Length: 534
Image: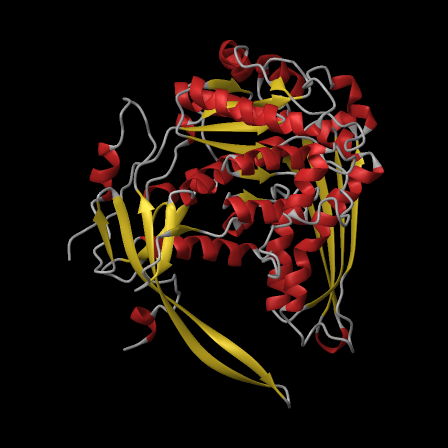
């Protein structure tokens, strides 16, 4: 068996000196994968089990296996990231971080000299287990060096904002990054000014009106769709890009009402946009514009951007969408801790989650309708964990958790969000346990790496196709709802009819095992038979 030689293939696709995208350090010797004409083609047996519940609380389990072929284009394209909300805390922080890393800008903080990094990014700062060495010890490789991936230093940044401030001024306004870094990147940031954006006052808090000085003209929502499409095409042409990813990192909107004949089908949604219906949100306008041109669109806020008609439209155009709501701090921890408690046989009875923050996100969330969107996304994170254990949660004992979410705007703390959680659980023999957590985090420094990961993984999966082994059908793309992004999202969007997975460890395992499948390796396991058998 010969190795894939991915490093050789990837390096041959690099055209500009200094480009970091596509580098790999892993060679896999497997007869289940081979490189053909710049593509990595792998064979994979997807093994699962079909379970039938039978009377008496018993189960009948039948193992299943389906053979697939995956095909990965090894050439990483020149890619642009367009953010909706470019001038906000996340947009300005991410742009400054990429510039600092690209140009190797060191800066001084009160702790001393700081080198730029991408800490908090799974793709850039975590590792993936490959297997074991000759002594049976685990071996890990950088996550982004197993297969050719986009490197953030190579991403071209652009986007829209309802405020006209250039990114140097936006960065200063955000008060996230240390002054010495701001001072050094300002000359680059000042050259970037957001494109005019869409502003429908009914969808975001009234307190945002004073920022809205950079708006697309006119009231026609269909014209707005066409303008966004034109902006993307011009950005792509101007920067000689092969691919563009669009991420919504703008204000939280209120929930849109799901109305029959308005947004329930793809055709109705398009007709409603052409009629400038009041219940079509700005984020849905951006999503539709992207879908029509096959541009991946990711919603980083909690509103229901992807109304049923929007998902159906993505299906028709086979265009990737992902959402909802960046999962950065409190909810990410909740998706681990709640899963731990339930898996340990401990019965959480209530979760009380309190936040206060002082950035513009907190200002917008101080309005009741926008807070309601956030409350829904934060609460849903434990749903599948409750459903996984009918011993602890059932009709007799109760199948819900008392779950309270509080968010308060406190200007003095700025971007340093304070989160306090209390988990109250039932133990054996009527005992109880309380876990209290106090977490202070710099909100935008946690959220910005998520945008990197969502962009990198969305771009990566746009190069992956599959078919069933032996089929005469052509290779096709994954289903448009890119649920593999759920690791980074509070309320993960799932295929209609399928339940979303919220457990962080399950989400990570799915992502890792897909990458392993693409290189001809089986699913990750921790059997450790090297240690446990004679």
